[in-house]
Length: 565
Image (cartoon, rainbow, N blue to C red; front, side, top):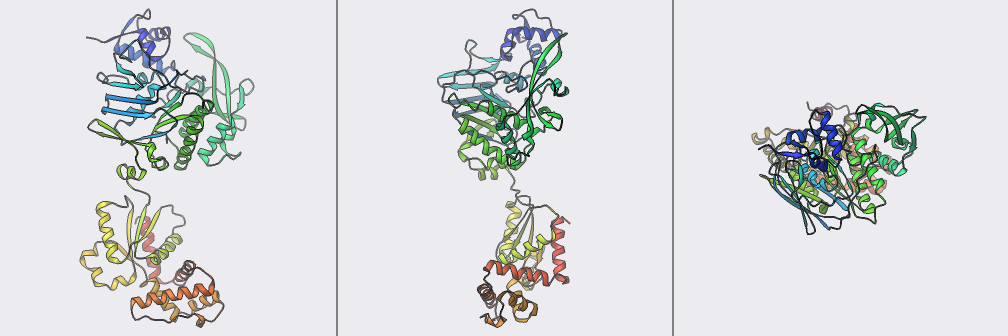
């Protein structure tokens, strides 16, 4: 049996008049005479798609037409949603307070995150299911809202409609932005609006409100400086003659544009991130006075779209501010760690899908999500060294040689050579450092330790400092290096003998003790901190040995590792 649908049912679902459906159907060559005319399901979807693609239906927040949907009074306290048999979701139930705030939905790809977002969007955009859930495969789908004591069950029969045909579901004042993949975010841009030029003489051109200018500048650039790009943002009302169904009509368009000398760049030519952000900021601007009315709902899929990480962080700062100040409820999906890390655990909802059975967990801590969903990749390179002195020396070597290379690295003091080998081996299994490349740098004295150079460890890549260790080197300089003595005298303005240091070198412990005493004495007379003193001594090592073949080879080996060679 072929499923059928009447014209007025198509019109009702799309939120337009039956005459508009009849008009478009005739353009497609379909024979329909009245609102009661019957179409097959295939014809109905063809008509709906034709209407949508020809922009007969205005998307929510269509700035060029200045359209905003009126909202019914929303007295319910919670939004309870159940989804059955929708794409990858077999069963999902979720409840959220209908109150101002910020909530993020996090999930792995393909688990139903976008389906949940779109299902929820029915509350603010009545025709959304006809836009997003089209074609076959929804025969068993049910999307059910429980708002207080009332139940609203949506199913495709054959177009999307309520199971109880005589009731209507409340609509919340709000905004929905879908993902680029689903297409509602940008496909509604009118080609005609993109093509015509701004008429500086006749168009009504006014400067955009400072609220929009400053928030665009702050989120994108970090400040509201008057020299920033969006200080030159204008709002334009333009009237043009346009051919519509064999007739010419006067059509009014409203849009934003950036002034560039004597020309204007219309918003439709902004970057993806700028265009999306402008849509969001404009919505907040127009509803910022609704604080004494019902909470407005903003639903966004992929809120981080085309925004760089710092802009994402500032966006979250503003979203939290807007929610509280203007009585807004933000619900969005994201993949961005930058955004997740700037959310409270109570704001994070993790969607877990096991064979279609979905459960949403809340609260969730950001680092827990990072460990479950993402590979830790904070650093490009990780160096494992024995102690802080080796770390300080190695960091200076790297900084000295990599001034033109942009990479991230961390140097971790682990302990003795045994501990370093153990850490390296465990990381090979557990990937503590994600995809970062790992390099062991051992003190030079390890080369003489037989156990550290057995076959068991030979395959582990490692480099050795070009000296035994920092303590040993500085003590030897203190005893026998005239230039080092001159350095000390430069800082303390006295003869070296003023330092109360008894040199002992019989054991490793003696050498460390002597080194510590040198540091303390130098700090006392030079009025430098111990940290500054160590820094001065390491700078001396680098400068004094800059032509030494052994030191130059070590630096070359480090550079080769960082270059990936």
